[in-house]
Length: 245
Image 1: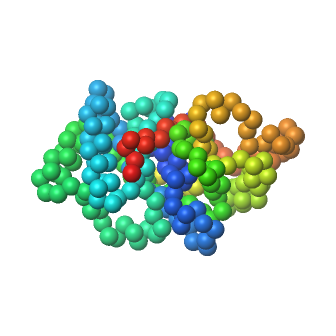
Image 2: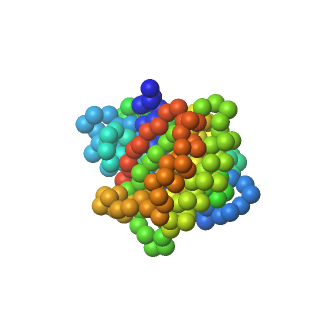
Image 3: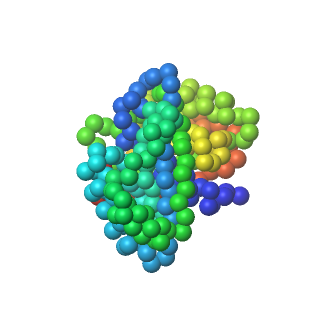
């Protein structure tokens, strides 16, 4: 049975890959990372929460900070996700520098905490070559996430399938805006998460990744990984440009 609460905390993590800086997406030897704060808002407090996030976004932009902000488009609509990319985990050694000062920051933190049920952090690992950037000039809007938990002992085989079978097939079909990452901290390290970027809902009706392949070819390719996966889930996120900077 899928652990719904666990997966609800994962859904925004992959989304930031499409917006990550070129240093993360480059074909380097070292992986990059994505850090996500997931916030679950109390019933009836969404308007207060979003007002506070708008204040933070204004202050953060003025301070030269950056983040991407996402909400769930379906399902757990009280869940929101603030995302930033890391070149190395050592980037966290510098600590967090608040975009507000003194009493103003203390009041903001207290007010935000009062609107939330909980707040959690996760870190994902972005492997070299696992991302197909979106078309130049495309705007992020919706992100379809498919995340799969692989049976213990099959992580290396699953990664090989991604690199040798799945990604080459998607690239051959010419699809742009796809990425695959793995949970590193804050969750099950056997969980792999893919993200597909769409400009709108209508785009999801169009032919998919494998329209250039026969049904037999698709079944054979996907069948190589089916026995490795023990849990799967699908979620959809919406990009919040008004709260990103």
